[in-house]
Image (cartoon, rainbow, N blue to C red; front, side, top):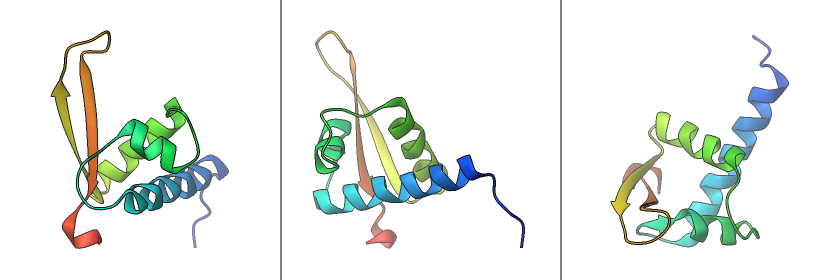
Length: 85
């Protein structure tokens, strides 16, 4: 068995927490803010965003980007892939 660096292990655990938070949000598309609130936070950190990227890379979740009016012109939404439910 190959030992994983501690940082990778911690990131994998964090990605799993984000996955569970997204799952708890329910079916459908959810914003980063929705997921953060489910985790008891006001907003996501860059560490949270990196964990979302891991979940996207492993094809456990899907993402959509929406252009909106406002100071931040993009809104990302996420949902769990059907085969992960």
